[in-house]
Length: 200
Image (tube, rainbow, N blue to C red; front, top):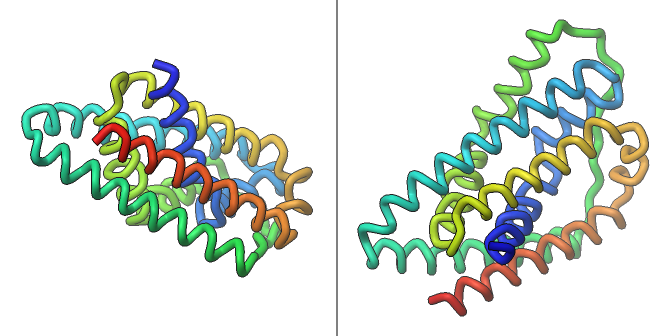
């Protein structure tokens, strides 16, 4: 159980802790103290629903096809190695999170609609949460524990951004911070890829 839980935690953390539109949006709302907790809750809910769809939908499908299971497993290994390599590449050329916190206040409805657009209109969210995280979770001995680990990573990250945005902003503006984060992400991806190879 715990192995599946930590695999879900590590894979999801590695995928969501990166500079992107969704993280920048949540951080900006936190800096403005504008519906930031609602935005974080919406992002967490979307992640949990998408990961659950991927894990349990694909789990049923993969259980019926050993060949598809092998294809998915090795595809996951290749993707994790590629993602890890990309994180190493980013670490070699560090960047910083830039976000303008000076905007006029918006209504809760407008902010949540914008958060939904940033989350669900990004094609990478489906590749990451439904296909990659879902297919890896479908292969775990305990898919439910894996999903719980993924939900934990999403919850901790978005709450950290929402509640600690003002404190985190100076750190996230430093290239060295993102270099260390990307090195950690690469390590997580390589670790989980190695576990998939062992399971094969």
